[in-house]
Image (cartoon, rainbow, N blue to C red; front, side, top):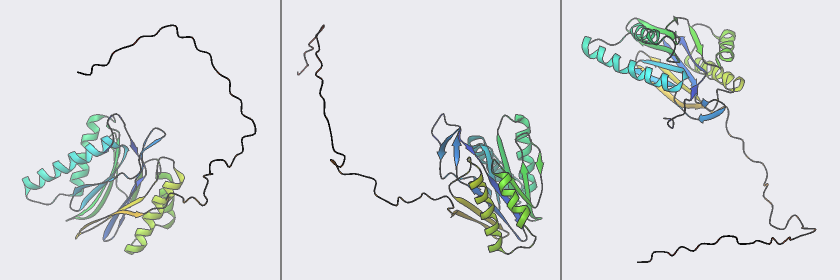
Length: 244
């Protein structure tokens, strides 16, 4: 939650699809122009018990878009009596963004596991979408996708996949000023989702090595000059204080 009047922007989130699980990853920095508005924001949003999404772009737009999708999915589940599909969530999201013609500046990666298997989509602000084994969006996407293109392979183990996603997010943090702070992960399987908040902190605050405070009198005063100022009172008024 940001103060009113600040349109923070979120950068660098990614999602990668492994069998039989899926991992979402994101950094935690939100910026307002050149100012870090939030150092520990959430970019991984809950849509359904086994469907999550990552948002980039204008943080407020991404937040309201995911909240609307979560409420629509819940109403759809109650109305049909069936668990939601990842394709259904993606279709509703891209149709909503298309109606705004890009004025809702949110880029969203949707992924999850449903009765048909694991699916992964990226939805752009104008309503177009992609479906790939791994996806990155945001200003740190170029650095993150280079790690995937170098090290991604099918049927990876869970721990190895977590390290890959962590390293991809870390690359985006170190190579992009709009990305920073911590690494969040979310592992989705058929049994449910596990949100790993603060999974890694690659850009921690450095510790001060020495003491840079000096005692009074350390620097000697060699000369001291005082120049008195003569003031002429040209107007004076006295206001009595009400004490009753």
